[in-house]
Image 1: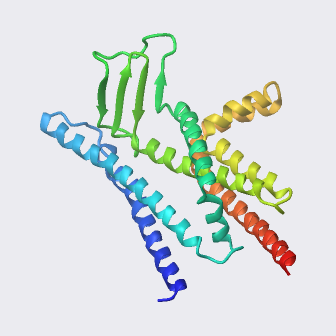
Image 2 (image 1 turned 45 degrees about the horizontal axis):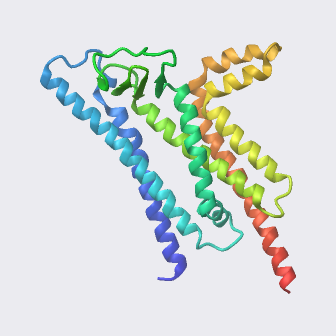
Image 3 (image 1 turned 45 degrees about the vertical axis):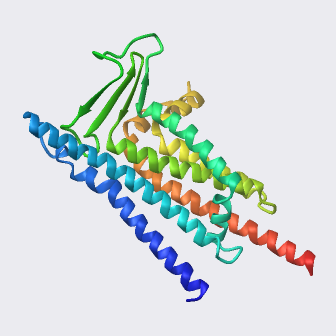
Length: 283
């Protein structure tokens, strides 16, 4: 088996793991019985069974996220074996280096804190004890009943002024949106650092980071745009923006992928310019 066959085999395996990971992210969450019932479990035995199924939903999402990240790491390793100047090689070079991984980690942490606040993943009562519970810390489960992805929910009241709330659709949304946002930031950073990228570096930074931030988090965009458009006729558009945040959230993922594709092609062109100039100087 030559090197190209080995690369293709590794790539196919990574794509298969991707498919399994995405199935684990969305499958059990969709099939959870609390999404399709109007009456929650009443008997103690039924509550225990539903709690076990709910725990399996969270475990499935966690395992799916691990498989997606593992597959992506494998793909980057495979793509680094491609010919220089190709799109996949440029993506791997832009995302697999130590500096790029550090950039992704920092941007991901900042994005999780920002989006988590708007999606109420964590709640903070700055005015003192404002979260009621019989004891601290305490945990509560919401096993039924709601739209797909909103049950089961887990609530951890850490202190009288701080709580953590999570449910499947938020976990999946935060994971995927954060991954896309951090990748866009890393690609924009790579464009800015490449010689020969020219004004496309500014375009890559703008398209990648702005689309990921304002579209992946419609609430974030509403607040930021409100400050920019305050007192103008365009401020009325924010009402529709907030009202249709869910469709915009769904639209954010193809837009972020499109931004990544755009930045990737610009980056491969910039790398090709560098290679041509280097080859010319050597000759």
